[in-house]
Length: 233
Image 1 (cartoon, one colour):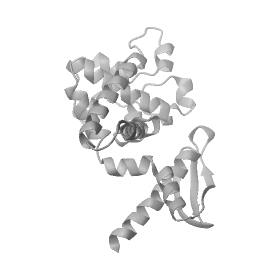
Image 2: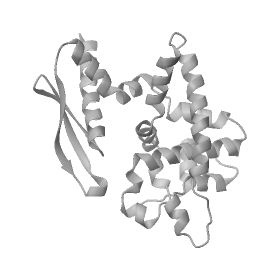
Image 3: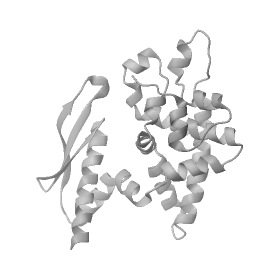
């Protein structure tokens, strides 16, 4: 069980709050707030609502400028890939945001600290807290560009790995399937291993906290290998 000082998180993201209460609320899950006899902090839900809107605005403007030749439908698809629940959770884990979340005892015991839904919600809440604390969009924009929209090509390849691999296999007239070949850990913190199988041959394996995440990682490993092989040629 982890719940590190929020000051360490501020150092990690490079932004220090004037109103620390906002950050503390952003890190407080409903289960924790409800357990406290004296509610020191609100939970993150209202801040998440605000942060979601800020994230959509910043990412939309970024993609509009980054891809001047793409149509609205394509931009919407790219944005959805970059700010969906698994994508946000993936980025949040890079800064170990899960270590700072306050969870109730039941949610903690149920593996809440590892749930994409909670981690992504807290990430949006932190964005909302930064917006209120700084009085504008500049600070959250810097956070979003640095931790969520960086390495755009690599992240799009990862987030869309299964669909990209399927399209390439269809063009090459090859069959593609996935098989869960291993699973370890307790029920609330299971780790699955999936194999990507192309034309009956195992091409790569990937691990994840869900079967879908493991398949995504396996597909990504195949695409990375193909990409590296092409560069060498």
